[in-house]
Each structure stands twice: as C-alpha cells, then as structure tokens.
Image (cartoon, rainbow, N blue to C red; front, side):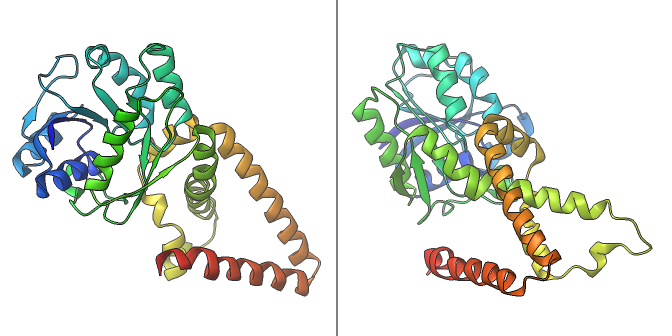
Length: 288
C-alpha cells in the first residue's frame, strides 16, 4: 500500500497511474502538481487526485514521486524537488529518453542518486490530458526500468511493484541501450510520419492530395497527430541516436530508390518480401 503518491504532471500517464492504483485500492492518497490549473482542477473533479499542491512545498508522508512530464522539464522539476531528495523519498519518471534524465539527476544530486529510479512505460496514445487517463492503460504493457549505478534495491523493488500493481510487465535495460532501442522503434517512426505529411503538404497541383489518401496513409500518419512539443523535446534529448537512425534509413531508401530507378525487379521484390516476413514473424507475433 502506498501511503501518499505525488504525481508531477497529471496527464494521460500520470493520471492513468493514479486511477489504476486507486481502482485496486493500492494507494491512500494522490497529490497532483502541474503547470495547468484547469487540468489539475479537472483531475480533482474526476477523482484522479485527492489534493493539489505546489512543487516547492514539502508534502507530509509522501511514499513516492512520479514525474510524468515532458522530458525537457525534468531538470527544473528535479531542482524544485530538492526537499524530496534530501528526505530520501523515492522518485521515478515516465520519460521516453533516459540519458538526459540521468545526466540531470547526476548534475543536481551526485551523492543522492540511489533513490531515483528512471522508468519508461510503453503505453499512451494521441489523446493527452487527464480526460484521456484510464485505469487499464498499462494492463499487459511493458515498462522499462534503467537502474543507475549504486541503485538502492528497495527503491528499485518498490518502483517495480508500483508498475506491476498497474498491470505492467517489467524489463530492465542499460541507459544507452534504452535510448538506442527507442530511437529505432519509436522516435524514428514519429519523425518519418511527420516528415511524410510535411513533404506531401508541399506538393503543388490543382488537387488536394490528401483527398485521395486511403487507409494505409491514415495508418502511417496516425502518429503525426501526436504532440509536436513533446516530440521536439524527445528529438533534442535523444538526438545522437535519432540522427544516426535517420542516416541509416536514408541509406536504405537510397538503395531502394536506385533499384527502382534501374528496373531491378528482383531486388525490389526481395526487399519487400524480406520486410513483410519480418513484420509477420517478429512484429505481429508480439500481438498474438
């Protein structure tokens, strides 16, 4: 049982954690902190949180703090949570990049790292804000934890337990391994989706090309409907791995383009068949 959970950023992720723990009776009180007063009032009205507070004000009996904010805000938030760090309160986050988060923690609190557990839930959607929160968001989903050097085992266990109580499965990774993996399978696809929409929007002609798009185009560009601010911050925080992946993707496109240009039918179909096989046996299998 969590006595008091402090959620910084009561949106889709933070709100869903609160709702899940509340629904299962695993938390006594949830305190919310955030930049938007309207969003916090809505969270209070919905019963997602029980109280609103200010980040600079120490809160009694806090068992754990969850940072569910954009990655660019982590450093400032951590600085304002010095009272919690000094009191050895467990802090975990839900950001999709880990290197910058750990660097911020290390710079601010080089001797107080052991109770801070970096995390990343692989769940979400295009809808944001507390209205989109769901107690079932993490059911059967994966949460990545990237323990830091000298991690306190009790803190790690309690963060693992929090996510398991929400229905999630835990995987542990090294920090750079995490950022490299999610650059490839999450960050790069978002960049490509945004880029495709941008490219087609600039094509000139008497017709609006989007009027002729079908289901495939809609599926491919769905994630271009995500928060631009959030994805700008993710790109900046994980730029080394993302730029590397963009360059690798450009090389693949160049080879495919050359094969198409020179009429190399066997090479083109081999490319497509290999991709289809990988999707069927490695990607779709995940959802069986």
